[in-house]
Length: 313
Image 1 (cartoon, rainbow, N blue to C red):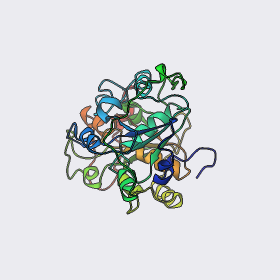
Image 2 (spheres, rainbow, N blue to C red; image 1 turned 180 degrees about the vertical axis):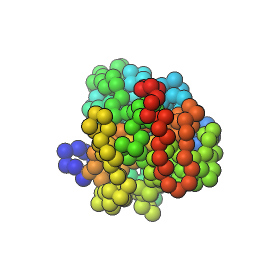
Image 3 (cartoon, rainbow, N blue to C red; image 1 turned 90 degrees about the horizontal axis):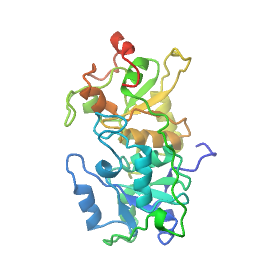
Image 4 (cartoon, rainbow, N blue to C red; image 1 turned 90 degrees about the vertical axis):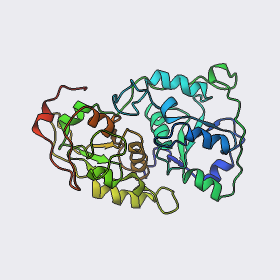
């Protein structure tokens, strides 16, 4: 792994030693597809001490944001900054995120804060809620009192970037299909078009490579070692020819709605590979926009008409 960037992971024992540290904000992000409120209910029933809860729909997305009409567009960075400040996050705060689903939602919060240059750092709890319970560490039902950073005399204000970096819009992606590696983090049956539980059309974006995000995890639910992840991605990342700008070999991650795609971004960081570009709208944005899809186990080719779509769409 690259030595010039901190690890995006924190082990449960390391977090356990910092439960009393006021410079650490623990965020539970449990969330259940198609069952609004279940993640919050799980938090209310039991969570790690001092953890707050942030909801994927309410706190980490904006229906009108970047990636619409996908299911989980990115919010405006300034609005996201205000939400994090209200949650007690300041410039010097280490944010630790966890969920109970292998990190696929927690990695979205990790990506957002990392992408906007959060100075205090952000990490994903390796192994998540299951690893915390397996280690027989303390749990709680108490909801901590949150002091917004703008009101706290002991913390600095929060200053995040004003623009999302390394993101791509639908039509810009369409124009470059075949000239980059597009990873689809969804499960194989959805990629192949055998089933589609939530989006309007079954299949995948033409040229996308099937790369289910769960394969980044070992049997214990923790991220695979860096060398194993690197071998996995080396086998998946086949750069295309240069595009009109001369750029080649870039990697774009996508999924159903721009959430589990962030898990690939985290795994690539652990593997010591360059950060990918995120297609925030992902397949929900693509399929709701009436663009062609491919089915079956092969990536398929990009229809020529895709290269002529207006940019930034």
